[in-house]
Every structure is written in C-alpha cells, then in structure tokens.
Image (cartoon, rainbow, N blue to C red; front, side, top):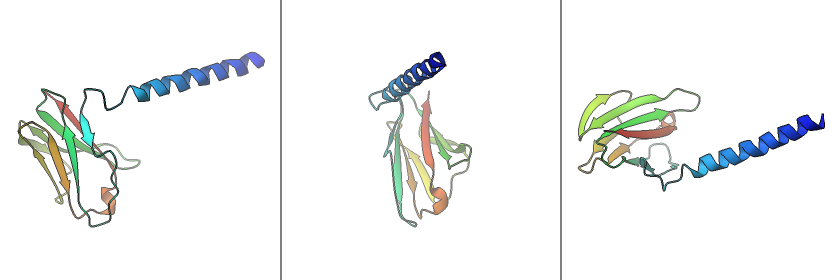
Length: 124
C-alpha cells in the first residue's frame, strides 16, 4: 500500500508542476491576442468598453460571450474594419474595428444577463 500512496503523491506533485508551467506560459508577454481589461465589475445600467488587440498581421477579429454553465456564443465578426457576420449581439452593445485592426466593444445599459466572460480571437 505504501507504494500506491507514494505513486499518488508523486503524481500530484507532477500535476501541480505542469499546471504551474501552463499558467506561466499564458502570461501577457506572449505575442497573442491582448484583451483588456481583464476584470470588470459594473452596476446595473452602467457602461463598459472592452478592447481587443489582435495578433500582429491579423485583420479578422471575432467576439464571443460565455455565461456561467453555458456554451460559447458568437457575437460579431469584423474583417478589415467591415462587419462580416453578426450573431447574438445585444442592441445595447456596439463593436468597432479601427485602422490598426484593434477592436472595441462598447456595452451600455448593462443588465444582469450581461454577466459573462467575453473573448476575442483574431485570424488572417
């Protein structure tokens, strides 16, 4: 039995080390998409702006929303500053893409159902 406990302990340390490396590997120093701010807390009825800076050379930006326990929802896509496709984007939200291809999502009259994680992605 002591071998089983040792194996489990060794596995736990290995797993912990892997998770730590993985988290360090996702730092903002990476040359991937940059999204800001990381966290927002707003009152109902408030406004907020999310910014997405795509990977250098990418002109396609897509926004997604994921509420707790739900699947990812497509919101909107811009390619070279032109809206290409629109999914579930509340009328209280607007998205703009600028000359340098960064994108901003303006959210106004915030509601409780807007509480979610918002993601942006970029591609060529």
